[in-house]
Image 1 (cartoon, helix red, strand yellow):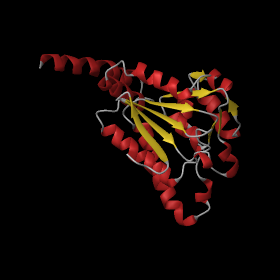
Image 2 (cartoon, one colour):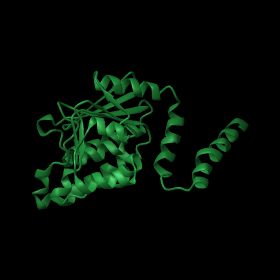
Image 3 (cartoon, rainbow, N blue to C red):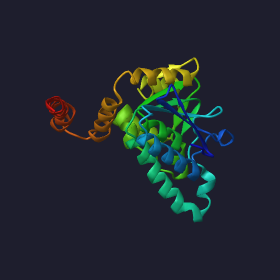
Image 4 (cartoon, rainbow, N blue to C red):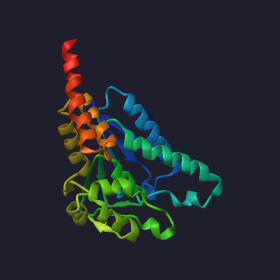
Length: 237
């Protein structure tokens, strides 16, 4: 797959790497980039080759957020909305595990992208925040509060303050601070994940995405009872 604003490759036959590739713009998420990410994820979802994915950024930044120059052009507003609406849902609903390998800035829409991934690791210089609220851009609150809790998510979304890698690790936003090559570490994590069958990983991801607001009983039926019944029915055939 050839794209203009992202790079795509498969390594070790099953691990896909999407690299945000506008380093001169701090990997700002433009209309085109969001559309290319959506297209890439759709093809990866349908591919029997891909078992897990990694999203990272070219150059020195994960992503500094949306491309603000596009917001200055009213004729682009519909494209901005449509591409943004599709892209966020495509990342969240991707059926296979996604790891965000974050170097330096993950701000605004870049922060949102990180929260939509399953696992986040970062380098020591990483910073996270929602400065866009100062300019009238409401951040995504809900996926962030699922990760770090209601109170801290309110704090970060309302204040727009920037936190460093140590704070991100302390509050559970990232699971590791990586001092070596971050992409190599993300690949190691992906290999560990892929020690499990992809079909099982897709099942777990499905109820991770769908059961966030379920009661214990509703979640238990989906995560326990239905899985046992499906296995029993398969064994009977």
